[in-house]
Image 1 (cartoon, rainbow, N blue to C red):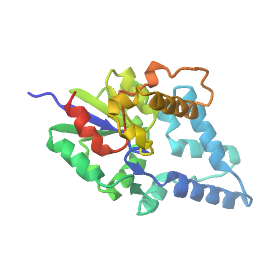
Image 2: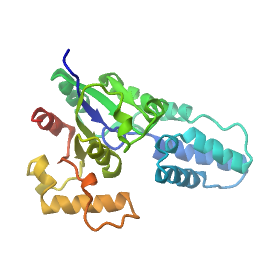
Image 3: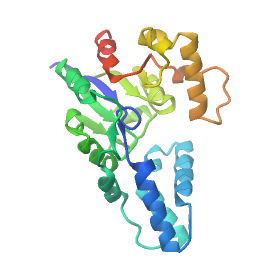
Image 4: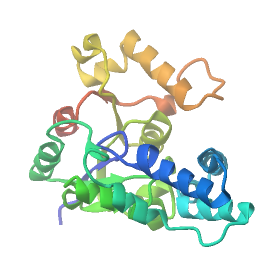
Length: 258
C-alpha cells in the first residue's frame, strides 16, 4: 500500500481570514458590557488568559474560548454564558470571512490531483474553524482537519501531527513560533507564507530567500514581533523555515522537488 504524502496547512493568516477579531470578539464585549450595565473590556482579559495558558504550554486549553469566557463570567458573577460557536456561524459570511488570495481552491485541488493528501493543522477548535472553511468552500478539500481538542495537543507540539499516517512533506503557515517551530520539531519542511514579501525577495527562489540577508532580517524582525520577550540576538534554528513563499501557488514546485 502506498504511503500517504501529506501537505499540511495552517488556516488563519495562511489561507483565510476568520471573523474572531473584527466581529466575534466585539460582539462578546458588547454583550458582557450590556449585562454589567457599564463598559467592560472582557476581551483583553480573555486574551491575557489565552497568553497565560500558551506560556504554560497548555496549548489545547489556550484555544478553548468557551472555557475562557465561562471563567470570566464566573469571576464577574454573571450566569448563562453563551456559546461562541453560534457567533462564529453568524459571522461566517463574506466579506467578514475571506480567502487571503485568489486561486487558493485551485492550488489545493492541484496538489490533491498530484497525489498529495491535504490536512489543515490549526490551533482553533473544529467548531470554530469548520463553519468558516465551509463558507469559503475549502472544507471538503482537506482529508483531515486536525485541531487541539481532537488531537489532544496544539502547535508547536509535534504531538498534534501524530495521527497523520504516512509522510508529511511540508507544513505551510504564517507564524514562526507556531508553524515553523512545529515543522522543525517534527523534522519536516516548514514553509513560511508572507504575502507582503518585498519584490527583491520575490525575485529569488523560495529556499534562497531564507539565506539572503534581507530575508534573514525579515525573519529576525518577525520572530521578535511574535515573541516580545525573546532574549535572543540571532534567530534560533527552530524558527528558521526551509523556504519563504509569498503565495500558495509556489507550494507545488517546492514539494514536488522534495
